[in-house]
Structures are given as C-alpha cells and as structure tokens.
Length: 261
Ligand code: NAD
Image 1 (cartoon, rainbow, N blue to C red):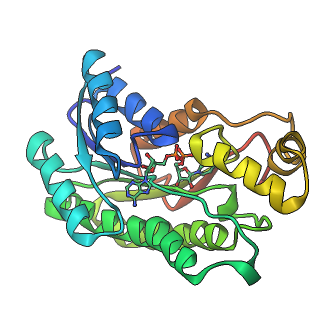
Image 2: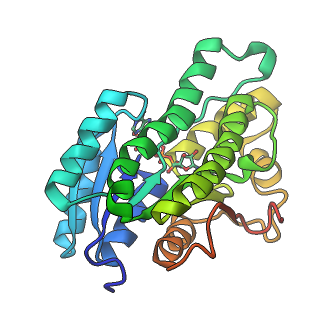
C-alpha cells in the first residue's frame, strides 16, 4: 500500500466520477493528493474521505481554463505536500449536438476545459517535475473518443484526439527530465457526465434511453458492459507506479473491447 509514498499527486475534476476514484486509489497507495475541481465543496468532501481512511489530501478550487487559477492551485498543493510528481488531467464535460447546430461558444468551452486545461495544468506541473530533472508522470483522461468518432460529439472527439498529440510531444520533450506521459481512454462509465447525455441522445436520435444504452453506448463492447471507475483508476495507478520510460507516450484503452488497437 505504499508504492506511491512520498509522492504528491494532483487530480483535476476529482470531486466526482472517475477523478474521485483515481484520487482515492492514489491516496491508498500513499500519495498525498490535491483534489482540484471547480466544485470546492465536492473536492473537500473527497479530501475528507481520504483523510478519514488515513491518507493525505486537500481540496483546492481550480478552474482548469484559467491560467491564474491553475498556477495558484498547483502552488497551494505543492506548498502543503511538496513538489508535484503526478498530474492526472481529468476534468471534463460533455456537450452534444450535430456539427451544423453546434454553438461556437459551446465548442470553445469544450476546447478550453479539455485542451487548454490539459496544457495549463501540464505547464504548471512541469515547473516542479523539470526542477533538477526530478521527473514525474502526467496522465491525460482521454476516451475511446481519442480514437473513434461518434455522432453529436464533434467538440469532444476533436478535444480527446488532441490529447494524444499533447501526450506524445510531452513524452519526447519530458524524457530528458525523467517525465513520462500517457493517455488513458475509457469506454462509457456511469458517471454524472454520462447520465446527463443519455436522455439528450435519446431525444436527438429518436430512441428510448434503453436503446441508447444498449445500441449507442455499449453496442460495440464485447460484453455489453459499462467500464467502471475502478477499472480506470487501477490503470492510472499502474501507470504511475511503472518505473521506467519503457512505457511513455502511450494510449491505454479501457473499454470492454469497444475499441481495439
Ligand atoms: P463527472 O461529471 O463525474 O466529473 C467531472 C468533474 O470535472 C466534476 O467534478 C466537475 O466539477 C469537474 N470540472 C468540470 N469543469 C471543470 C473545470 N473547468 N475546472 C475544474 N474542474 C472541472 O465526469 P467523469 O465521467 O468522471 O469524467 C471525467 C473525465 O473522464 C472527463 O475528462 C471525461 O471526458 C472522461 N471520460 C469519461 C467517460 C465516461 O463515460 N464517464 C468516458 C471516457 C472519458
């Protein structure tokens, strides 16, 4: 239970869903975890839960689209727990509509959270990881939509594909400073992000919600099963623990066979 003892981790969007489970798992392995989220109350609740389990964590208010907020939040976490060793850039939202009706303001919001947020948090974390070449691990929360397209998700698919490029550049630039990077790509996970889009997709595609789940969300899996937050968190912990750059710049698809590479 101590594989990450002495490490400082930051997980964005960790007040809920996938990020919350990742934070719990990293803390269980001994990392001190900064729970960074727009929702400070939710972030603090997760930090409290970790502390009650004997771990170390703090909640931090952070809008990942704001350079000032990101830098301030990262500095606060580093001041409390020491320099950042692990960044999980996970915060994300979903807005669905066809390209011809997609609002430009929604497109920009999506790119700001998923792509700008990944860039800004990476830049802030590298300040710590590059110092003295102490190194670290940066993990981006991609999606099967980093590799596949689905109707109604132009901004999400474009943003999740962009993360592959960012991770690969970081793998090359970061190697000389002992920094590794990956993209973890889940299939559908039952979190608030997905629960919200089921009725929206049903309305737009003229299907029942059950049909959307069976045919749209899980139709291409090998077993008709949702990926779980535990599946994703376990993958992230494995990548954080992996000791060398034998694994870097990779995309790990966790999707019940929905997408195979
Ligand atoms: P979620 O809605 O449960 O949690 C997302 C969290 O991000 C929330 O706590 C929210 O407050 C936070 N957030 C939103 N905007 C933010 C901002 N600007 N700054 C900081 N925090 C912000 O969603 P989830 O399903 O756990 O999704 C987490 C990540 O996993 C996202 O990047 C999502 O695209 C990705 N993902 C989810 C699924 C899925 O099926 N749920 C599948 C593949 C990838």
